[in-house]
Length: 392
Image 1: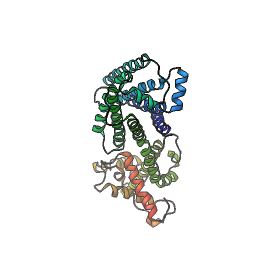
Image 2: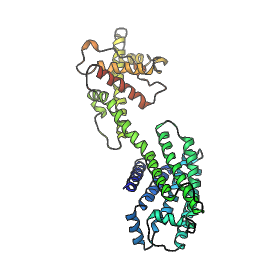
Image 3: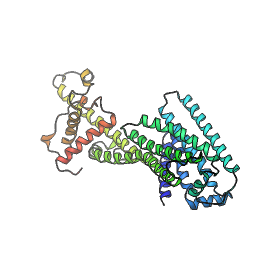
Image 4: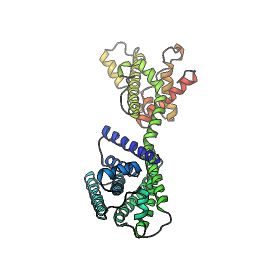
């Protein structure tokens, strides 16, 4: 049961990476992650005794699933190594691709040699995976087919561990990389224990403990791979709740911009789409209010001039200060915009409707991205809705 939980989590992580690669442009990193996670999931599945027995029976070779596990482990190490070296490299894309091909080629040669050594060792009686490892990785056992793949896994995943820890940080992706790297470190330790057994050393732990450590490592790797998707989903749900009141109000005022349409796709994409619609509606609302303010302010002085002259006067009325956001904290700037939208909502008292603060107030502060600025305005608007007792 535990084996299938591990294999299922790794399969889920692989499926998410495949889905992401289908939605976005395929890249070396996506391909490497798919290979690494899928291969590690295959290692877990091949150690489930009923599946092991089925594969051995179909292929007419006892314990052949163990030879396939060696190949899958080598493929996992190769995919992980290509992934981390691609992310960490600052070289040109063509050079990175050549390095990746070279890494895959080396891994392919090692996998073929390991499989050939496995078959050349001859058949053994059918046995459980753990019993097979205990017999062949002990003194007097046939440990030669395991030396080359285990050595490659140790070297490749040690590089992955070093680079992963070096590039981990407190960002969402950095945290996921850190958890993934911890899992890789555990795989290195388990592989090291197996390697010591293969060269004839007893080692600090037995085969059973090393196999258990490998299972724990697979769980940690799966958790690190799934962590960004889980955080993205919960973050998108939180952002969707924050923008919904502002989305509804602007959708009532400007239904022509498409607010209210529910695009298909991942939740994060839907939130981004709705934020872009809020941005469009805010621009329309502000442009309308700004033009009305200017025309009212110039109606007396320009009453005897033609329309073209009035428009020229309005167009040239803006100065350089209007391009920059006002010199106030970003939260206060967003609150002013939210109060302006909130006071002009449907059913609001006439006396509460404030004057439009000006287009410069919609300018996002330099410390905010487009997404963060829309979210800040929406958050301030939701706070105002709650303050008047409206459920938001």
